[in-house]
Image (cartoon, rainbow, N blue to C red):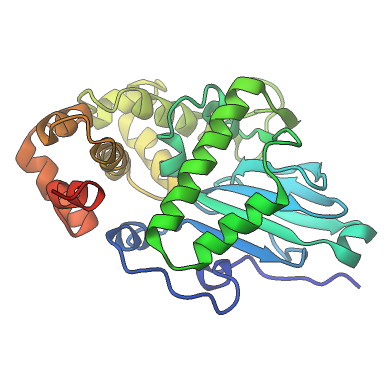
Length: 310
């Protein structure tokens, strides 16, 4: 009889008795709101999920042997062995069936990348639009190896924040390569396709459009009315939909995205802190410092000095 497990908790995502990650401001940033889970990697025996669930990640699944059947918001597909499959976990999903090879000797590796961090990765082409539109993508067979996945898992479990940052950079590079070389579609994006409707398609379709508008216009002023106008709905209705689907109010989402962009620009080290603030969409340097210190527990200058001291 197949084993059945509950959706993974944050503790389970650390898998086993791994050392606790080095304390860092990002942990507070991601633990302060349930809409965005922390970055995590698990390695485990494939098991079924008793109920569907959803969470604030781009989830990546990889299995050594056999295949798994998934339900994605009412649409079923099969996750093949030794292929990295990625999807937006903000849509309902559930593992329904494991084939005999998967049950007998399979090992599964899951990667949980916070969706806000994914949306600001550069040069991903249509990948964000595809996945946020409900598409389930399967990367090329050579996109990642089991050795690399195991190394990422070890880096994550090391508790070393810098090693985990390198893993995130390498995941971003993997997605950039996929954007250039292509990927296979297990399920096409359906939210904005105008085709068959599913139970969550209507509200999510509007939210996807609002998210895209925010990401593409972060450096410009973004009012709640401007964002609602993108989908042609009454502002109160549109913003309530956004909060329901993304589990965070739209203005807080805008600030989070601006902070992530600012942190990335600070690490690149090419712009002055003033220019980082304005290119990230903050209207003043004092506003930038206030939001940054509240989110990360440190100042922009201090976090830049961690990367390039002196």
